[in-house]
Every structure is written in structure tokens, then in C-alpha cells.
Image 1 (cartoon, helix red, strand yellow):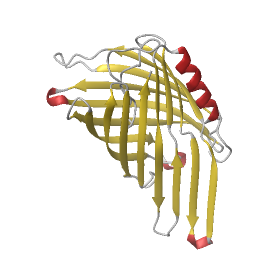
Image 2 (image 1 turned 30 degrees about the horizontal axis):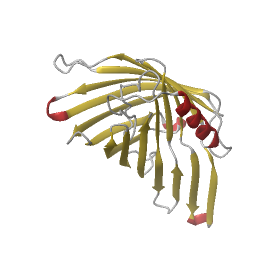
Image 3 (image 1 turned 135 degrees about the horizontal axis):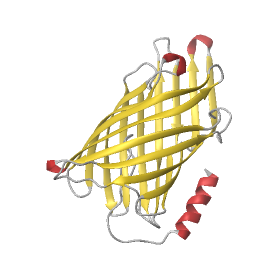
Image 4 (image 1 turned 90 degrees about the horizontal axis):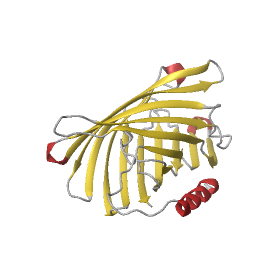
Length: 263
């Protein structure tokens, strides 16, 4: 996290403060926001997360992470992004082998760009649309490092509905690599529904297909998520989320809490 901390400090110094509209975040749900941070603005989104999995044989896996996203606006429709799961700590337990394995280290880094293609129009039923292009880079510790450069492309649509309701959908494709078969493609598909109860408080539920792939490439990772976000001020948000995996290759449970700040 030291390089990211230094980058955050540098960007904070370079980005001027802005008044005006409030913060719009890409966390805590899996479906990204269609909004960008705006020209000259910088936004930090970070948190703590835990995954827990187990099977009938008593094998258990727990992974703690510090997911972090840095966003810098280069125009009113374009932003640059640096994303990582941060510091990772895993603990796997295999009772049959009387073995407990612990690993610590850092996750890979993802470099990306988001383009806000169009604004939404509630009256016309037109969604706000954004495209995201990311490349995961194998910068992590040996225990958590991926293989080479892994690009992904996603498109997001958001619809504002009556009654302070909203619906978002995201689809995409990612290219990954393994040592046996080389490069392969996986799908991304998710939908979220949210409600703003007040100007500060909102909740959401979500069906998230984070990875859609055959078993030989890790299988599909699909979860049902629920969470909440609360604005402490127009530029500061706290949030919480819980996820339940619904495929056998998904983590059984995921828990997270976060903080987002717009500069």
C-alpha cells in the first residue's frame, strides 16, 4: 500500500478543491457508477473486506483485504483509475491433513479509464451510460499474483425511476491467463436495484456475476449482495455490504465496510 499512499498524497496536492454536487462512488456494490469524478477532482474509495469459504470436508479459507480505488478526473467525461485489493492476508485450514497455511502480501494493481458516454433522462427513460477499460498488472506478491496483463472492458447503464428508485446493469468481458491453456475469456454480468431513503441514506440489493467461466477456468463466481451507504457530508461517504455466494466456486460469504472521500 505504500506506493498507493504516496500516489494518493501526490494527487491530493495536485487536485483543486471543488464545491458543488455530492460524491458519487463505485463502491460498495459491484455494478460501477456511470458517473465520473469531474475535471480536476480526485476521489479515494477504500475499505476493509473479508471472504469466508468452507466445504463438507471441513476445509476452510478466509481472506482479508483492503480494496482501494483512486480516481482522477481529466475532463468532465473522463477519469483515470488505479485499483487494487491492497494488503491481503489469507488463512486456509485443512483438517484432514492437519495443516493450516497462512499467507500475507499485496494484490495486483489494475490501471484503468472510465468514459461517461451519456447523461440519463428520467422522463425519456434514457439511461446514463459509461464504459470502463482496465488492465490488471501482475505487481502483487508471489502468493497472490496473477499471470501477465489481463484486460477487461465493461459497460454500465443506470436508470433513475420514480420513488427515488434506481436500477443499474453492467456487462463485460475479461481476458485472463493460466499456465495450462494460456489466455481465455470470462464474462461479467450484474444488475443492482437501489433506493434513496433520504438525501444521505441509500440501500441496494444486487445479483453479481463477477466471473462467468467454465470450471476448467475457475468456474463462475456469482453472489447476491445487499448493502447501504450514508453521506457524512456532500464529499464523504461510509458504507457496508454483505454478499452470499450462490455457486460452488464463489466465496460463501463476503463482508465489507468502506470510506470514500472526494477532493
